[in-house]
Amino acid sequence: MATERIWLDVPFAEKDAAKRAGARWDGAAKRWYAPRAGIQALDRWAAQAEIPDLLPGEQRSLGAGLFVDLVPRSCWFTNVRSCVDQRDWERLRRMITRRAGHRCEVCGAAEDPGAKMWLEAHERWTYNDATRVQRLGRLICLCGRCHMVTHFGLAQVRGREKEAYAHLMAVTGMTESEAREHVEVAFEVWFQLSRIRWTLDLSILTDAGVTVTPPPDAAGRDTVATETLGRT
Image (cartoon, rainbow, N blue to C red; front, side, top):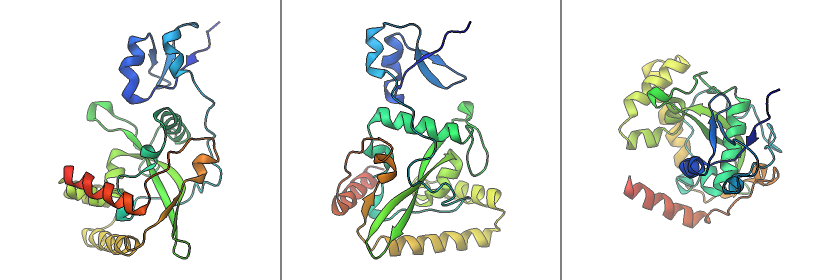
C-alpha cells in the first residue's frame, strides 16, 4: 500500500535549504515532501491547511481573455506576492495553478521549463471611483507570454514590445492596427486611473486566512514604483 506523502510548504527561494534538510521533490505533484516523519529540520516547512479553490468574494469570471491590464502607477511593484508571507504565497500559487489544471487560463499553455516558460499568478482588480478603493477581485493563472502582454508597459521597458504585440495578435486574432488601438486605449485608461491614489482592498485573501502585510500607503507605493523603475 502506498504511503501518503508528508507534504511541505516550501517557497521557491528556500528550496535549496529544504533539499539540504532532507526534503524530496515530487515532480508529478510539483511539491516538496518529507521522506519520513520525524525530520525536525523540516518542521519549519510543515504544510498548512490548503487554501480553498474559490477565495471568499472572488469573481472567477472577472477579466476573462487576454488584454492589456495596466494597474495604476502608484501600485506598480506592489503586488499580492509582495504583501504576503512566502509560505502563504506558495499555498496561493499552488491553489491557483491546481484549479487551472496547470495551464494558462487564457491561451491554455502549460509550463515548459526547457523554454523557461512558467505559469504565473496575476491580479485582476476592480476600481470604485467614489470610494477610491482598488479591490482585488480575482487571481488568474497566466503563462509568461500572456503575463507579458498583460503588463505591456513593463514589456516595453524590457525591450519586449514586438514580442508582446505578436502574442496579443496570435491569441486574440486582432490585426496589427486593432492591437495598436487596444494598447492605446489601455494606456489612456491607465492614465486616468493613475490620477487617483487608491486604497487597496485585499479582503479576498485575509478572509481566506492569508496573512497580509499592509502595503505602503498610496504615496509610499508611488515612491516604490519610482525607485524600482530607476533600477530596471
